[in-house]
Image (cartoon, rainbow, N blue to C red; front, side, top):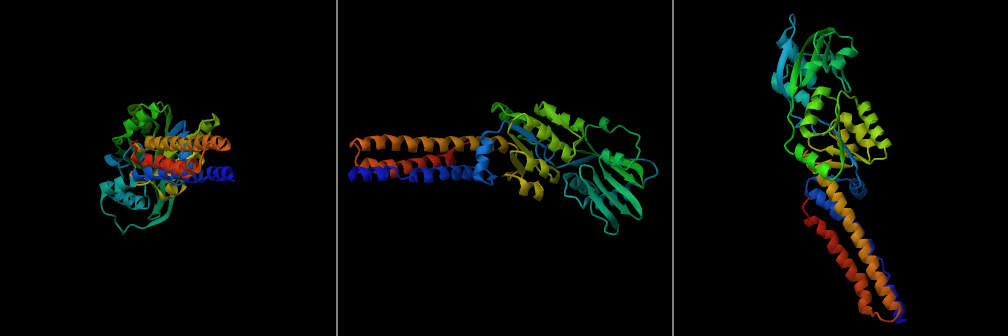
Length: 354
């Protein structure tokens, strides 16, 4: 009877039932403490095994705070008049480029009435003003509507916003963005973890290449539509690699949903992307990407430590109990004692520096 009671106490699963969830709660808490929101414990495990990080450029590795550098208009077009129209049209968009244009032009002229406003994903905006069509976006937008232009967009190493009025090329604005302070450190840390890096962006290829070269990212692709990003990630996943995608814009939502772990920038990020993402970085710092991966790795390590500790101690005391060598005190230690040790081990992740 006494040995049976010892077996009963030792075999109680409290240590496992308490310590394993606490290990994951500790990881989620460590993330929250550092401004990283994990939407579930399973994403900690997924991040721990990430082999390839695919990231957007604008708002992710760059500040996403654009400033107008140059405004060029062709003869026959009123610069002030068209800029006022562009300002009203861009007010319909939440893109960082729209903010830059608004900062440059100033207050919105509410006398200008827009009709048939349409946002064309990956291209730009279209509207009708005073019965004439207004196009504002990249040069692919002009190509889509068969608007001819007499310049090479690739000759400018900045983001270029093309403007067309009444099916005629009116001019362009060049807008520059700056790389985030911790972007380089982020790339270095990911490389130290033996994680591959790819940059995908809807921005011009030469702009994307310029940023990628500065950061030391070998694989970078520009001029991509949302479906192109999806296809690129599918190609990577076809190589049996676990992929995390980091983005912020509404155009990134489909590829965030497709990846093994979707990570969104919570500050500048669109609501659709944040809603779709599995992990949200609250302060938009790319340095939190390797930190989140490290938290996942440490959490998984601690959970396995708790599992091995609980099973090992219980197995040893069970054998001793079967031989009549273990008393109720050892049985209580194998149950409550091991549970307390596992809990303390799980809490340890809160004090770690990542």
